[in-house]
Image (cartoon, rainbow, N blue to C red; front, top):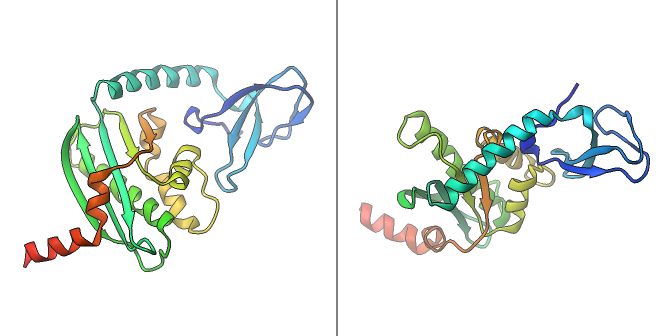
Amino acid sequence: MKFLHPSDTPRKVKARTKKSCTLCTEQIHGGEIYYQYIEKDTGYEKKACFRHLDEKMLSEFQVKRQQYTQRKASGECIRLETDASGVEGERWSFVAYVNQREEIRKHGLTPSEITDITPAEGFAVLRAIEWLRNAQKRDLIPNNLPVIVGSDNAAVMSKLETQSERGSYHSLWHKLNQAPLPYRREARLFVEGGSFDQAHGYAQNSSFEHNKKRLN
């Protein structure tokens, strides 16, 4: 039997009428509790009966989530601020902070198959998370802090929040869903929008030109 994970953000609902469970086709009768969740492949909201979620696991996840939320509020966290730039999203960048101190900033050119700003913004997030995973494998930064991913792109934020892989650039959205999965499962992944000036400036063409002159 397929089980939902608490990180899939299932939403508890009381059925008003009879429904069918998407995962096992069992009937959900009026008055019974069921869960609504986002199906990753389609991005559509689906229904799951109570059999597919472990309430004990959900309770433990919520406790950990609250603990990480408190640490995040105190500034004890890893923050990845991302951006992309160019008419067709030619450039990506991110700036990483650990406990409010800048750790590293990186930028580069997006793959040739990306020809739009939204997937470029997603690629920037992917690059940031890949850096984080490698840095933690090498014990360069702590492995137990809340991880905040920041983007100013509403579509990318929606992908991160719902885990939907639907639409063009499916391969990219799948990678973007898989990369932060360990942090999501540990209840320490947070998604935040905003305007990130440092990442924005580092994605601009002028920043690339400056780097070329400095290296030469």
